[in-house]
Image (cartoon, rainbow, N blue to C red; front, side, top):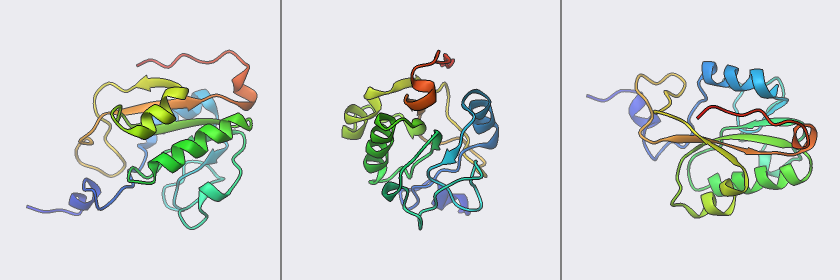
Length: 153
């Protein structure tokens, strides 16, 4: 029995829409200025970059939410998030917890990591994701030197 969600949970689609309630909890803590990886339909902030905008070519500023494409490009987005934190942006990333991947060791481990308990149910999905997730925070800018909130695992 197939459904439109079959593509949602396959390797053919690397976009996993952030659950609204999950984002709202983090936004209450961080007060995001920019959604670095969005579409006009699912943007979480008034200021956002779409695939067509190519966030990798732009400067990020303020406090940034990033739920990147989970395919091969994730390493480029994690590198960009880390580099933007060195230029004063604080970047909060929702990523699959893929601790065996090179990008995890090169970039994620440079940030503060909060592993999520259970599996997220991404936007519009009827079932939870087939992988665990984590929040990776690259501190910079206005939050980089302030008291950092503790995130419950």
